[in-house]
Image 1 (tube, rainbow, N blue to C red):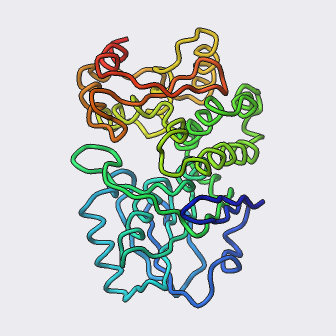
Image 2 (image 1 turned 135 degrees about the vertical axis):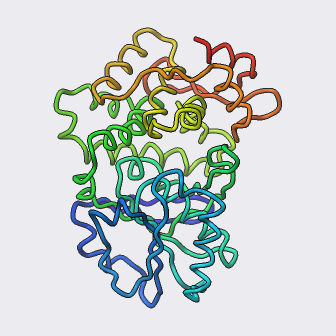
Image 3 (image 1 turned 45 degrees about the vertical axis):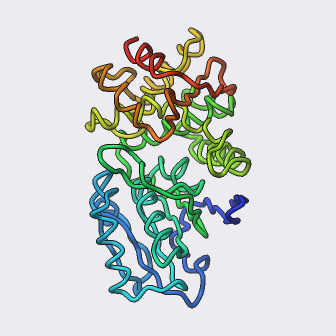
Length: 328
């Protein structure tokens, strides 16, 4: 299937198909040189059929999203004589997408890039929307740009290689999409055989994000809905790095639901996915991290609450309210 994303920065297709990678050359632009950015984890179980492409390997996970790695990647692009007419390919999970997109946005004042996500999290969230970023000084995604890819190719066969933990952590972002905008998507996770609905889960998650980013590409209003679970989740991720991103988002969502019935349904779904519910991070440290969140403005920060599934609310909380919630 093919989904088209149309924003002010431009349009790009998202292809979703099992086995897509086998004929990836059919979809790539002709007459271009390619550089593949990936990590050892991806290369241990997958590869791209592009023999002439140079490959740059970065550390796995958030460790790769640093100024040091960006500098090395930019030097690699220069050494390979990559020009504005060439293309960088992000081949991996969400961190690879964030890093590669950012490098593409600043190299030669912007070159094209393609996203080929290999994880559930990247497919349902990170690969589309145009956000790129690296971490800086212990603040997640604090340096970045809005630079959409020219093409996104999703091969669901990659998901077969994921560990159960990595799969569940990625699905947390799909649960988020259902919570904020799509009750039917959320209901899929309440089915006993939800694993048989993976293609629909990915597709519905993509349509949720598409509907939001097409209206608000640069997060001036509506796109803040996608931050549900991320205000506390990003703090947990920094303070408790043994947790994966999706695990932190699950705990962050639990923090922002007050309605007992809705919270109960969310808890059951997270438990079914074997995701943690609560983080034991120090409340004062959590509040301190959130003060430096990129969504902070003045003496407060924008948060997202969901008390009825599919009906998210954007609110502005003071840091005093954040501190109070961190202690509950």
